[in-house]
Image (tube, rainbow, N blue to C red; front, side, top):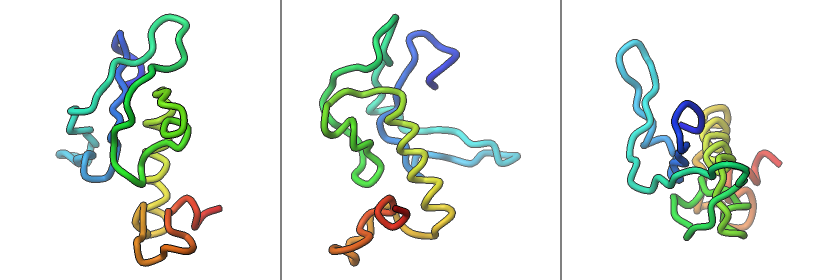
Length: 106
C-alpha cells in the first residue's frame, strides 16, 4: 500500500473489520473509502481532514491534520496490541483508567 505503487496510498481506516483473511490465510485489506494519495517527492505528509475510526487514529495525525504513512502503521500497531492483550481498542467501561489499549500498555 505504501510502497510499490505511485503515488502511494494511505488507507486511513486500518482496523480489524477491514482486514480480511482469504484462502491459505493470506490477509487482504478492504474498504478503501477513506484512501488518500500519499505524499509525493520530498513531502513527508498530506494535510487533510481527520477521518477514520476512534481508537485506531494516530494521535499525531489528530493533533496536526498531517497524514503520513505512519498513521496506518500506528493503526496496525493498535490491532497487534488487541491481538496480544485480548482487549478492545477502546473500552468504554474503563472511562478513568486504561480506556485505550495504548494506555493499558504504557
